[in-house]
Image (cartoon, rainbow, N blue to C red; front, side, top):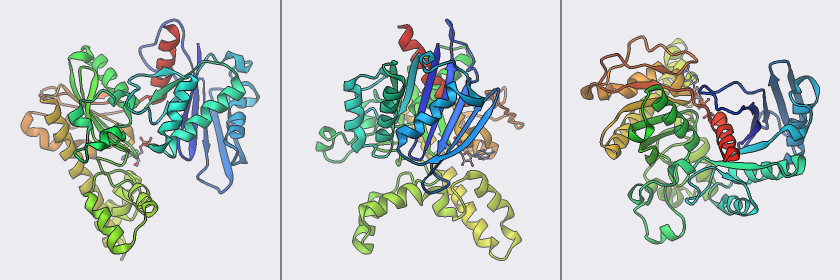
Length: 411
Ligand code: ADP
């Protein structure tokens, strides 16, 4: 079965094609074709890049309309140097990453007009992503006709969180208004939890896990009985941990203060908290953890370096403080722990962040292997005598979407 995965972001569109036979492979296979459109580098230009085993294509296109750009992207599947299928009809199902599925969708689902209407309605909660997802779904309808389409929601894995974890202690009316913790990165947390259980040769339903997704966006999930019972992101992805450009949780009174004292508007606050805060806001260097770490190391070399390295160090210290504090919170929500799991660009690659996150767990008997050898393979990084195993798992969101499509179609 040839499965097309569409992963639409605010300013990028990633896509890949998997082929799955009659049996699901135990390891994620490489996709046959991978493509990306990036709208961030040049005004009014969409940059297309496509890679297959046999070829590469790069092109610059007019930035809009989105459907036309997607049309060009998909055309590289069946024409030119990156051709991997003979015609569009070979695509048997299309899976879309959809950011917001509200509280009603617990699992991935075949897209119908009703599902489309729900995604549209939920655009008020995800104003950038849900409309982009919907445009992607409609572009596929135009280009590939009535091929089955599947929505895989970022929120679904958290949708059965207990009310005590999901409901904010504000006005009771908020519940009716849909103001609650939804949680995000669900596809990544779900994949990492299942993969960890498989590697431990245990049934996921009998494990208590904390999964730490540390990428540009960061969130933790507390997982019990194969379900997320608590998570750090909330009503939006802004809640919880410090991230690349997002602040994570801050005292809401700061916003009231800024509105009253400095005349901040809702749009200005939105920009500040989502785009100008976090590692970037505190360090003044970058939202990229590698650049922040370089600034810490090289800061003393030039006259302005002291301040640069001081701010970078402060940014890292706050990031680590909040990460440890929130891991503590997840631990208490679970009341036990069978494994701690790191994933995402920072979680998969930074031994420093992982060590710092685990250090306060020493009293529980958590011990990392000093070598912490991690390659592209998923790996156990705790010492053999650690009371709780610690894993690095390379997250596979696109593969999880493809697998969900395969399972839904088999059913
Ligand atoms: P996204 O959330 O956009 O998918 P990723 O999961 O790719 O992002 O994570 C990006 C983050 O991972 C960046 O902050 C980047 O600096 C960080 N990262 C990647 N490699 C390393 C590394 N070796 N050490 C520290 N941070 C790293």
